[in-house]
Image (cartoon, rainbow, N blue to C red; front, top):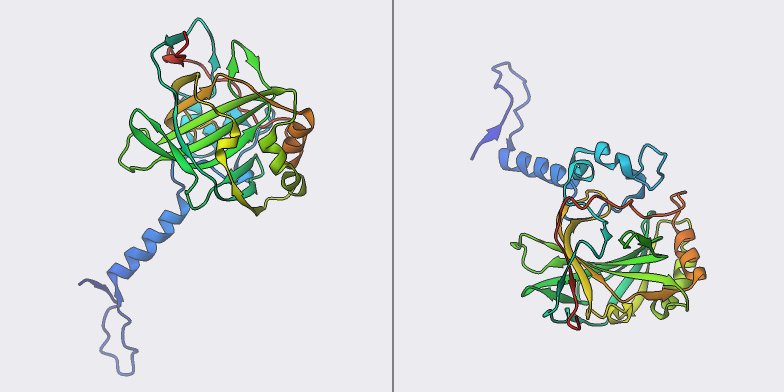
Length: 289
């Protein structure tokens, strides 16, 4: 075993050298390094690191310049969100329904400063299966207005259900299923959360929500758009499988206002601008076509 020690001295009364095992030094260095580097397949949760102010130095157009780990936000060729247009979409008529296996589980609600997130920390809320690969549900959060657009139309709100592959060796390790909302009747699922969201206004905090059922988020998975993109927040990691539900949900203006007001980023929205397609293939899975 190697050691680090000071040079021995023959001087009488000299203190004995202190020996430090090299493995201990390397262990400490490794832990410090690991703590300082966020995983590139995880969204940044600290709202102080970026924002949605289009005119600010931390706004969407500058994300890729803020940290080298976020370079994909500026240089990536498969970024999200995008505009889902009829002239670019390939119809998949023989598709099957999205395979969901969600179940009620203990959850927490968190004001992350740039969005409101409902999280299942024990990862017991179930999963979806895409191309035979299981993706475990981690959390859902909301953007207003919607980030994705359909034929140029932007909707009032968008939910992102973020999943991670159960097998860490899967290349496409992230999958996000999205639901767009238009103004209309109050959303039943959001009605369960709204009082807690209102109480968390302007405060970065989290609180227990008890058992919540992700099946109630209304992603039916019957007809959906699919393409390969990225996280819509730093580090903008690419290779994310996107599933956007074609059926539009409803949400009241009051609910959208409550979600928006709770986030204290001083921007009028928390939606990233639409990114270029770069000739990516987009599919519309529609068994009824």
